[in-house]
Structures are given as structure tokens and as C-alpha cells.
Length: 160
Length: 80
Image 1 (tube, chains in turn orange, cyan):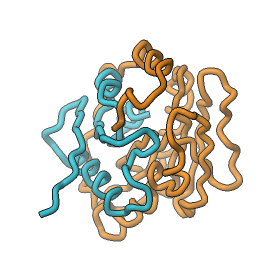
Image 2 (cartoon, rainbow over the protein chains, first blue to last red):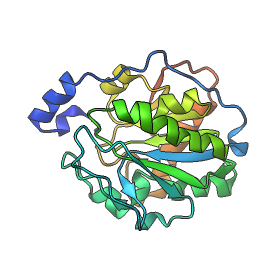
Image 3 (cartoon, chains in turn blue, purple):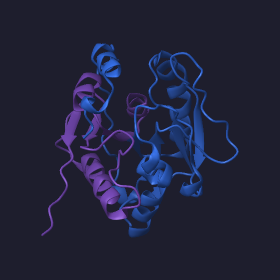
Image 4 (cartoon, one colour):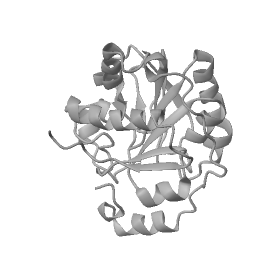
């Protein structure tokens, strides 16, 4: 289960006390066209990089707030997990990165006609960012702007 | 990220693993799944299982009755 009970005691305390950044007001974009005509992008915070890219930097205090562009023709099996957290089991997503970066699954959906197309690039970020201010103010507007310029209609967000 | 995407005109649906945290943070559309951390789409190498989760997420995007913040618990469909 996705439950606090799976974490060590010290981390459970941290999660309970952590001042989660509440989204208020909650912005909302209704689907503008049928899914079969929509362009989709994946946004994952599993810390994946594609071959040749710099790994995420675990030494940055508060969390690495940079992002990587993952190209749509990437072989999902070559994505590298650079999230070094020992708080969750990495074996599943290392064996099958689709678990947190489901490009193959979305390709199947495009093929079946359920969604219109896959964007040419997708976003990979680092999760477990304890100081998200820089991510929210600096990274997110720039990264999202790229998807807007690409004509992306829908985004599937996947954490770990 | 979800909030910024929605502000810039992209509809989002976020897989979420912790309901209590989801209720506090309030992403616009959240599909809460009953899986362990590290397994957001459930089972590695199981296309059908992963697609079932993705289908539930896509249906949230299509559902005109949802209001922000929309939180839905993922319930695997039973075999007919």
C-alpha cells in the first residue's frame, strides 16, 4: 500500500510534520478536445535520465530542482534511475522504467487511437524535494513553457 | 508542476501514492493508487495492469463532472 507505515519511524515523523505546500486556488484546465486528438506528455519525478545526460545531484540541499528532457523515441529500458533515496524499493522501476515513466504504455495508447499523439519530449524531475520553492518558481514555469510551445494538451504526472 | 501545467493550459492527472498528502497538497486531478512507493503503476513488466491504471487516469481527464481538486481512488476493475 502507498501508506506511511512502509517508512522508517524518523521519516514518518518528518512526513507528518512537513509543511506541505498547499495549492490554493487550484488551477484547472478542462480537456479542450477529445483524447483521441490530444497530444500527451509524461512528467515523472522518479529521477530518470536518458543515456548521455547528467544524473540528478543528490548533494543539493533541499533537492535538485533541475529537469531533464526525455525524447519520445527513447528506448525506455535505457532510462537510468538516479534517484538515490533508500526509502523505497527501486528494483521494480529499474527492471521496468515504464512503472514510473510509461512511454511504452502511452505509445500503445496512440497506436490504439485512445490518445492522439505523444509529444516529442517529456519531463523528468527529481522527487523528494524538501525545499520546493526553486522548483515552483524557477523550474516549473520554464519546463512547462516548453510543453506549451510543443502543443501539449494533456500531461500524466507520475511520482515514485 | 501540476499547478503550473494547468495554469499554462495543459490538463493534468497525477498518480498519487499517499491520500493524506494528496488531500493537503490538492493537485488538480489526482488518482490515488494502492501501491507501494517505487511502484506507481503497480506491477513491473505487466502491460495490462499498467494500462488499467493509465485508463483510470485518462477517464479522469474526460470526466466533465469533476471539480478541482478532484481526488479519485483507483479501483481495479473486476473480471467479468
